[in-house]
Length: 514
Image 1: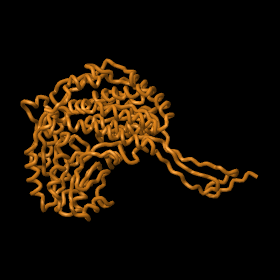
Image 2: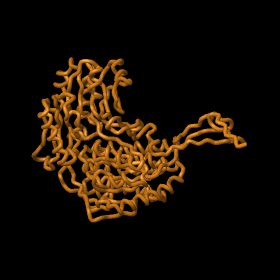
Image 3: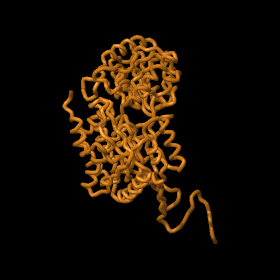
Image 4: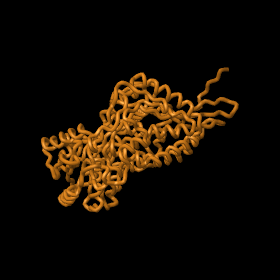
């Protein structure tokens, strides 16, 4: 086992009690009669409880966040960036314990937990630089002695609905950018990873207090889907950023659109790697295997499909089967294990149902997975990964199964492979493994991948700070993290200034009054 904090030390250092107020505007915290219990998929043990946010508490949170926003928007953006820099430093101090909590509460490996906290640190660094680069444009006017420009202003409250699989990073992607843009945030985390939200709020509270800032720049609400609905329906929240399933995203989009608000959606993926005949298998294997089984297949960028040239299909199948035979499955806090648990027993049931659907729909297994039982697997959340040969048009293949289930299929021409890659409702991440420059460029062209992310000679899984993250079609179209994603968190304004003494109209229109 690695030298990681014990559960008791982890909770103590992050300020997590046995029962925690689930509604927070910083130092102002609220409890209710209803609580959620967080269970660890590592061992099935209860970790702690969090109270559920009521409608009245939600109203109070939003009103408090609005007041915080009004104060925060007055602070120059570079000064806001300095606060985000301090938050990044605070995360550095808590990296090991917060990474351990992510691993223990969600089930990903400790290294992945540390990596997720590092993503939080990295987006803070990115946001600090961004705070001096919230640029607009200056344009020439067709009218004499006129000047036009555009600028970006803080938007208001940003509602953030995050998923269990990245319980802290996705919140930070949104929050760090929203903060430097001058917004306040209200975070509704997954009910499966509520304790991570409590920990992050405590870290922020210390930074806010040290800078004499309203802690309500970051607020937390907790509960089931109905709490997310409260947030989505609140007219005082101009932007809701939601990460999760396509089903959830459609509900959020409908609610927010119904009040003419904005939504930023990062939803499901059904990601494929095309393996060309000249692909380097030494690169294919780690890309495909990590993509399929990392986080036990619970990433929106997880590799779901391998589209393999027929000439090397059998070779790739053999190599992958051998690689899967070397996987070790067990406690994610033990670095000798490659695969940890699914997040809960409901996820296990979904996985087992998908395996049965593969059989029922005519697929065949190269590696057949299932539930693991016995010593070390007492939580009932550990499964063995699967590889199935299946046609792309099978209903189960078209559906995203959030588990370590990988499909294999053959192709003959690159255009056929691209058609298979694009032939699903989701459009998040994609990749081609090839040493052929023409094929690589064709894949990246308008004729190629229809996904928001298209890679060459790396897999589908993962995101690097700096690039805009998100996808098309049923993935939702939103972009988070890098590039100009910051514009989603601001309102855009066009300005025209007349510095002359006459009033010419645009397009040469004459309007003489005598």
